[in-house]
Each structure stands twice: as C-alpha cells, then as structure tokens.
Length: 141
Length: 497
Image (cartoon, rainbow over all chains, first blue to last red; front, side, top):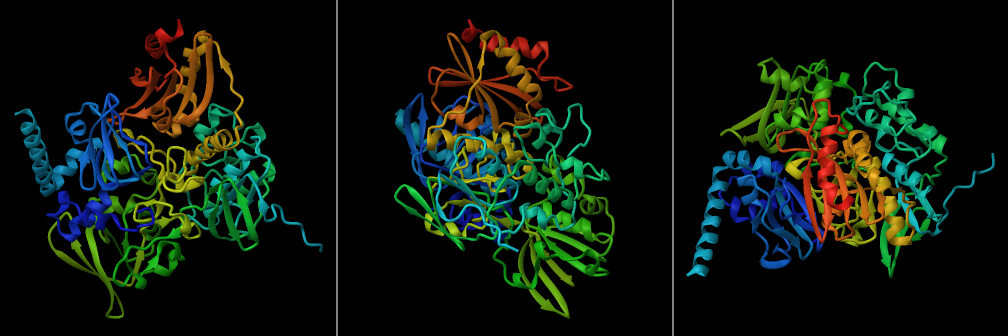
C-alpha cells in the first residue's frame, strides 16, 4: 500500500459515499478534503477531546475503542467522527489505527458546509447512518 | 590552488542529514549541539539556502519579519516577531534575517532571506558537504545505506530535508504545453498576453499578482472555489489577493473560475483550455497565449523508492508520525517544508505552520532531541521547576513562547509532576503528549478554537487519561493574567498539593 500513488480523486471514485458525483465534482471534492495517514497504533479520533474531524477510510483498518475496550473494527469505505462533528460534542470513542491507515478528512467545522455543498454525499451518508441504526435495532430485539 | 578537503567523507555515521535549505541547516545546527558527535550533512547544491536561492519567482516572501519589536533580536521572545530567521542557542546566532532587510516591507525579499541563511551558516560554523547528490537509500539490517555521487554513507537514522520544490503537474491531457510556475520567467515576457493560470493557491495567486501590470487578461482556474474564510487567515492575503479582489468586485480583465480542466490543446497560434464547471453547470473554452500550471510542488522522494515511504496529497508529501518519522519506513525522518506531512491533531481543522520556516525550524529542534533520546539514549538536560513555580512558568510560556504561538495546537510545553516537584520536559508535539501513556504531566498549548479565537489550553495527564482544559482568553492575548492564573491553578490544584 505505501508506494501506491493513487490520486485523491481516484480514491474518492471508489467510495460509495461519493458514487453519485460526476468527474468534475469528484475533482472539486478531491481539492476540498484532506488526506492523512496514520502509523499502526496511532490515535485518529480522541474520546472526550474537542476539535475532531470527519474521517473516511481509504486503505487499512481501525478499531473503535471505548474505555479501553474494542467495540468494532472499521475498514475501507467506513467513516467516523461525523456524530461529534455534527452535534458539536466531543467524540464518545477513540479510533485507533490497527494497520497503516489512509483516510480522507474534513475538519469538523467544515462538515456542515461540505454536506450542504454536496447533497448527494449527504444522502449517501444518511443512508449509511440508517443502516447502522437498523443494525443497532436488530441487536436490541 | 590546493583543493580544499571536503568535509564528511563517505563512511559510517550516527545520523546523516540531507539538504542545505533552512530545514537541513536547522537540523545540522541542532545536531551539533546534542551529544551525537558522528553526523554528516550532505547537499547536492553548491551553497546554502535551498529553495530561497530560486523562489519565490517574484522575489518577495509572504512570511513576516518585524525588524523592530518589544524584544531584542538575540532573544528567544523575538522569534515570535521574526518568522524567517533560524534558531540559535547562543544570542549571536539568533534573529539574523532582519539585519539584511532594506525595510521596504515587513516581508523580506528572496535575496535578503538567502543572505540571512548564508550568514547563519557563517556565524554558526555549520559544515556541509556540497555537491553530493543522494542517489538511493536502502536498508542493511539496522543500518540505512545512502548511496551518493560521492560514495556510500551508513547511519542509524537519517533526516531528509529535501524541500517541497520539485514542480508537480497534475495528470492532464496537454499539460506539457503549459509552463510550470517554476519556469514562469520574467513578468515582462507576458506583456499584452492572455494568460490562463491553473491553480488558485499560493503560487497561482503570486503569479497572477506578478503579471497584473503586464498581461492583457488573466484567468485563474481550478476545481475548488477560493475559500474566503481560509484566505482570511492565509499568509497569501498579505500580498497576492489583488487578482481575486478585482474579480469579485467586477473588475475587468481578471477572472477566477471554479472548473475542472479537461485538456489543453494548441489552437489558432495559441492554446485553448477546455474546462467544466464544478460549482456551476456547463463547459468553457479559454483561449490563451500562455498557460501556467501553478499546481504546487512535491518532495523529491525518488531516492527513497526502495523503502516504501507512504505519501499523501497525490503522492507529493511523505506521511509522517508526530515526530516526523515516515509512517511506513522506520528510521526515515523529515525536516523542513516536508514536515507538513505530520499534521498533528488538527483540532477544529487548524493547521500548523510546518510548511514555512517559522514553524519547521521548531520541528527540527524537537526532532533532533527526540532522535538523541530514542536512538542514542542521550537524555536532554532538564530543568527542575519548584511546585510553587509551576503555574507562573506555564503562564509565561502561554503568553510568550514562540513555539506555542507559531505552532498553534501542534507544539506544547510539557512538565511532568511528582510529589516533590516538577521537571521541564521541553517542547514536544502535542499529539505525542496526548496520545502516549506517561507519567503525570501537563502540556500547555496555544490553539485556535472552532470560532477562530486564539485560546490558551492545558492538558492534564494522569491515571492513563488526558483531560483538556481551555483557559480564559484575553483581548490583548495576555495569557499570563490573574484570570488565567486562577483558572490554571484550579486545574492543577490536586497535583500541586
């Protein structure tokens, strides 16, 4: 993975979240989002700490950790950090890279404008959130 | 004339620094002041200064140096006012750039900056092996093997201060018909021409500004809209926003367009750029005499190809840990402009100043201490701070520390605490303090809050947890006032008893 030279626009094109966008729109998004890589073991999102961002995994895997316990694993195409960014509160979990991890990022304060500028992305995100809720409800039954 | 003996012949060293731009020079200076005696500094250039020997094209920097300040130039506090000089431990090595400025602007000219860097080398006695070209880097057990035009260098850790100065061109049909920013040439060559500039960041606006008195028409084009909120805080606004200003106010002859470029082709004795709107629907054809690609630069990582150094930003910048080590290739460290590849916590989307001298000079100093400690077991001298002095010490740092004020939310002053007293652990990456388990301690940082306010923040680490406490702000940013003192004392009280 490290030596891959996929462009940000190429990465975006492979993610469900951005699958409704045209090529020019993808290029605009590619110039808007940031790209960050984390070494194995590095913390990406910090429980209880203000100022986190929104992250979409492009390559690698991460774990969601609450009070030191792993709750779920995340992989390519999964995203996190949106709840804190949308509600303005601090994240309720840590997210830690368990492999070399490549993410696209939108800073918390820019997420609202980003979603309003890209309603098709917002719809895909809502869809994913709905699926998460559905899964959570199945667990409760 | 007898040939001068060149320093640092091929051989085995503890650390090798590659580069003689400001990042390389700062690293070399700091290495000379820790107990790592076997280090080498190599550069392919024939004189110090790195990118400042050539750039910026229009000869004026965008980072300020205030020749007069409330503090003398040879003090640490003055660094806050001088964003271009390198750091010195001794007063004679500090604040050298302003002495070369003619003071037409508070932003040095390129040659003034270059002169400042040359004088830094002269005064500090930094030694560099010039004309030594890095060809490849390989691993041999615990050692790194750097093959150069002069032979083989072996070391345990290497600092690459390679700059971010290799022209980067996007993959674009017909891009070869365009010049890169780096080859812009003289402004007078654009007299009466119609110019399309691809890119709306620093170099795009710099070229546009430089050509305003010459070109007959200028169109800046790139997929992303100009971000006015970001620009308001950008170093760019100081000098280069005329083209944007003209466009938004409906001026003539200057256009700023949000469009993705489809292709560039020859047409009617000139060039034609085909583009499609990103924030609007439709296509456009732009006729131009010249097309300039101002799409930025990249770090020349080719010599490191064998080591699988992971990159971000379309392969342009090596991705790094909080201590500027490659996230994928251990022992490979970076200094200088490339340290922007270690973004830190980016709280509220805030970015550090690691892509300019003011910020990366501190990164280099922190990196050298880190290397000394982790690779060579050399502990830096640490000062003890009496418990009664902890609050005033941290307040003074929050009010005046140039590291905290320039590398906001990125570098922090760290103290560890135990029952008997406190130890000054120096300046550290904030992300490292927050994310690493360690003894009871406190880190002080200056941060930009979500609403843009500049805020003093302390982080308390105990029992494996880190808590964040924002302290009160002050209209004159006097973060060492009684209100801040009371708040800090309340936070630290349980530890200072």
